[in-house]
Length: 508
Image (cartoon, rainbow, N blue to C red; front, side):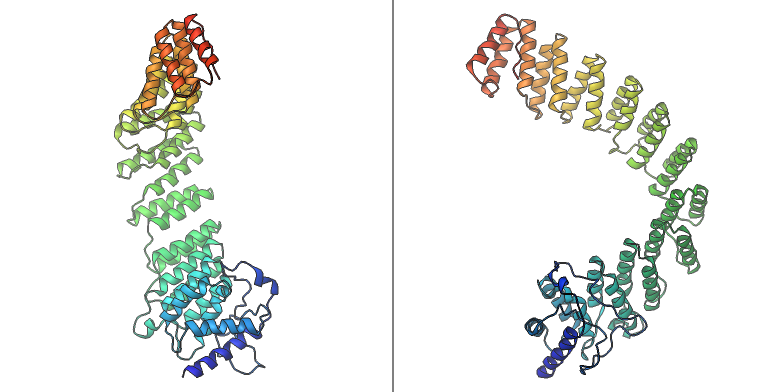
């Protein structure tokens, strides 16, 4: 029996490897990813795999690329198959061979599809869902869509042995779903529809809502909204109940195509059908209202979402704040966030930097400080850039004490400013005769991981020098010396002389 099997392997491989022309240049391509376009798929009007005759005058139905192979590479491939696939191998044996042997082979990895087809012609072998799934996923991931179509067609006409009983194989639908999703990913919607129709014939009952959603999303993404709606109508006719994802996809499609009224109508239909909208549904419609310049309706819908118990997301707040601020309604955006915060519905991860920036640009620094205090007090910690922006704004307005208090609060919360912003604030404090407070701030920062640099020490030494506090200044100079910020003795003497004469000499 083993001799007959080996003879059959030799006969089939000779037919495969000698009778199909193939470009020599493809042999030198990188083959860690299987090559799809080089393979010729069977004509759709005839079976994908037909028995291969041993007569040299007849071309096989599935041709293997030859790469102009000489007898030696043919022999190597034959030996590779002979070693790893014994007579009467099972689908599990073939799957192990494809995954663990052929897939990682530097010379034969791109022959996976043809080994798959070759195995189908072995009299004692029959593919099952495991080999179908591996082949479909491999072809889809590597964008070999011509080969993918041939495998799906073969799978439809040669179902898994699990289907020999009353029911179809339960793995068939997930396999088709992966293929349909891959087709939609690259915009091959006609192929996706063909796969969908083939799947309907292969499974028991109706397709799942997830597969309808994949196809509908593919049509919407390709701006074929009418086809998406036709599929939705067919879905309802087939008694497949749309879910929240179905409606969200279609509502988003209508909004993107400036058909906002249709989106609202679908939203109402969604609720009539008992499908509860989620935050994505509301975000899409709020953005649609703002695009239509219907700001009051958009804000009203945000509150309706809260009343229904649907939590706001950071994206919800971004849509509201950005839409209102761009329209010049910065005070309304401020009031909205304050109200959300007091109601406890403001998402903790929301970064309100953009609103702070708008408030500062409109010279509403008091509201910017109030916004940060209110939100911070209720647990919504601001981002570093929000804090830094406000510190810089307060500095420029001469509100140094407030900027210093904000910096202290930042450091206590573990929000570490950059050294430039920090040193500028220290300089302002020293210029206002508050060198001791600046030095305390420097010490607090060092305990939180913001270590002083040469400029920091320079600023403080100069401040102590102007204030006539020689001892404090000398202590800092000694600390500078210990930390390597004084390069030589001459520099050290100049700093000491500066303290003695109450002059400041900054070292860069």
